Every structure is written in C-alpha cells, then in structure tokens.
Image (cartoon, rainbow, N blue to C red; front, side):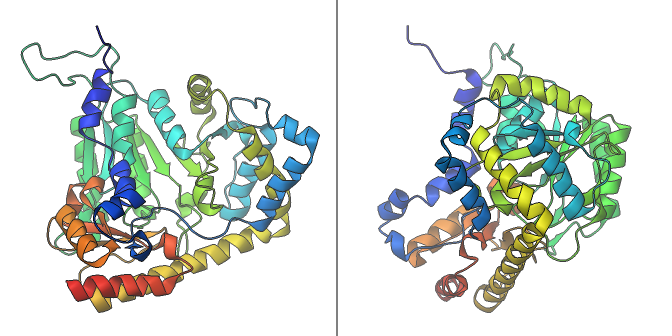
Length: 430
C-alpha cells in the first residue's frame, strides 16, 4: 500500500499559500506561458527590498572566507539561542536605535529567519486548537503557519462528513480597513471595542500585529497598541508585534518601538535581517520576549533548526562591532529609509495620475493597497496579459482586500522611472 501525506498537508495543498501563488505568478516561466516577454514586464509584486547591503557587511564575509581558521569555525554549531555576543549586540542595537531600556541577551533568541521564529512561536506560546487573532488585512503567511503549528496531532474527523480537519486553530479576524472610505483604523476606540468583543467571545491565545504592516504599510498607533496590550493582558494572551520592517518607518516611530519585554511580559516581538540589511536570501532573524518565553523557544528550536547559521552570525557580529558604534549603521538605515519614502511618494503620485483609484499612504515599509473596485484576481490577470504590468491580488491578505491589489515599490527603489512607466501602461489600458 502506498503511504499518504499527512491530512493537514493534503488539505493545505488544496488551499495553497498566497505567498507561493504570488511568487509563482511572477516566475519567468509563467510570464512566458502568458505570451509575454519577461524582460518587458514591470512587476509591482515583489515583497523585497532592493537597496544594497552595507558594503562593510560584505567585507566582513570576505574577511571570514579569507581566514582559514575563521572559516573553519563557521562550520561549527552555535548555541541554540544564538551566539552570546550577537545577542548582546542586538540588545545594544535596540538601545541605540530606538532608546529601548532594560533589555539584554536573556531576552533574545536568534533564529534562521523571522518566518521560522514565527512558526516556532506558535508551538511555544499556544496549544493545538487554540484560536489566533489576526488583523484583516494582514501578512498572508500567518494563516498557514498557524494551521501547521496548531493542529492537534491526534486529529479527529467527522465519521460521516468530508475528510477534513476538525480539531485545529481558527483565526479570529479583527477588521482594521474601512473599505467604504479606504482608510486604515479610522476609529481606534471602535477597533479596540471590536477587539474586546472578539477576545471575550473567542479567547485567542495570541494576536499578531505587523508594524509597519504588510500589505498596507501602515504603522499601528500608540493608542491602539496600548489598548491591545491591555486586552491581551486581561485575557492572558500574547501580543505579538512583527517588526520585520521596523527600521523602515517614515516620520517618527511610536513609543512602543522602545518597549522592553521585561516591562511588558505579555509582548513578543519578531525581527528580521532581511529588510534592513538586504539579507532576504542570507536569512536571519531574532525574537525578543521575557526570559520564560525565550526558554520555551530554546526548547522548540532545539527540535526545529538545532541552532542558527553560524557564518551569518559571525559576519553580522563583526559588522555591528564597528557600524553600531561609529554611527555608520544609523547613517546607512537613514539613507535607505529616505530612498523608500521617496519611492513611496513617486508610487502614490503615479497611481493618482494614471490609475485614479483609492489608495493608502504608506507610513513605512514597501507597499500600498489600491481599491480597484472589482475582483482582484481577475483584475491582475487582465492587466498583466494586456499591459505586461503585474500587481498582486489583495484577497490573500484578507477579505477586506478582495476588490483590491497590493502594490510594491520595494524592488524599484532605485528605478523610479519604471514605477511611472508601469502605472502609465496600466492606466492607459484601464
């Protein structure tokens, strides 16, 4: 008898990840199959930064590779929590860049990516079958991670019903986008009241808030985070802030960017090297939380990755030992932030000039979302086929974006003319 894949995998294959669908849509082979020239396609689909990594960081990798003994050390295991000096420097980074006090290496665990850490966080901080609160819209990958991480291994099925999972976590959605006026969380008091009602009814174990957000590039207000933390504290839940884009804020960052996990024990924050250091493919991330959570994460990580990548840790430690203290890291981040803010402005102006549809103004990050007034999937295929311009359907990020698309200016941060050209092509066709 041929063995079968697990039930949860079989089910999830039928509902593929929106992230994978997004990436497949932009693949060269898919573009060719649509009869288009890949070199002529302008894509607003990429969820990645495109500024150069710090030159000093590149040099640190070279130095390690050119030193036979140090390169030999990159092949050794690091501690499961991550290198001690690396964790010390990450704490120092929070202090110097964001004014965080009362944080140390005991509050930090290093992982191979924020994606891996988020998945392990579900295992460490929730029980199978417990609900999770997500914003609508929000990052598309949380749902799949939740299903895989919080489905009971002793799965129960309806004997006479369809062959689908019965015991697993479900999402409690909190709508934060006013689709009538195309505004993000216009009434914070009402949003918090809705959250209180949601928690009273569903009792989710944790709530995830990206800040800046993907796909909207909005930054949750200080008032909302304070209220959300109080609700999580009241119901014995965790408030998880996904800070993947933390350094890419426009304007002044809110006070909670400096909150220490020692002062807010119900808060967990997840961080990534992908965006600030343009290290998407090199991977690297860390989590900040109170020591009890870090201890739990260490045990989970022993079984998921055993330890984070040693070479990446060594290179970043060497880089931070210089750049964090001589001011070059702060200058590097300021320059990148200014470049993305400029790209955001060019994108908004091009949307207004050529598309003329409601959009959100980014407060950081790489994106905006546009209300196109009809099914996003149909719109994307129609525009791509007829103009060679690629947008991303919004519904994978939440029901509020079913008639919307996500627009990313990240990959074109240093090619602003392409932003204008793409919007002009799409607008002329529309």
